[in-house]
Image (cartoon, rainbow, N blue to C red; front, side, top):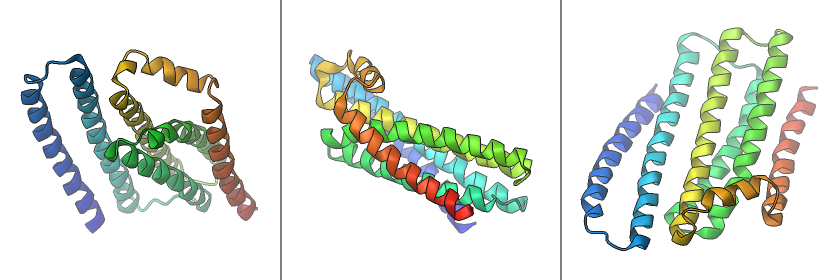
Length: 218
């Protein structure tokens, strides 16, 4: 309960800070003249709203935990083990995203997209595992619904990290502003060897952890 109250308070602070920074950016926008600075300003404005959304999803996750407690629900041991692997992955992508934005680190920003793809793969795999558990009556429908909601929030946080990474790349290369989505599309189409290697390495690592959990269950 104390942790829930702390997260709720932090989310209120995030909302307050977002409003304050938005007002500041609006005032500052009247002083910006060059196209390069306008492009940079626009990227900062986008990222500000992305950070607020992370706070929203964090509060959703806290409310999920509160609901489990109040309704005396619990995830199955299988779901808890899967959740541990997914949390390790989401913590990594959040850490890399923080480094990319805080230090305007282009190299870190390029590490985000491969991890985001692995999060998508992992969430899809866990959804399928969950449906199989439901079929075999290894977990309750109510707890299962909460588990699916948790997966959705985590997937959206990962998407936000991707958006911050793209905005960071555009911030460092304003000339790419109108080409950045084409760049991301090329990555997802397998046109970049560095992206492909990093994606496959991360995928193999985290899915090996997941399979190790499956073996432990067996």
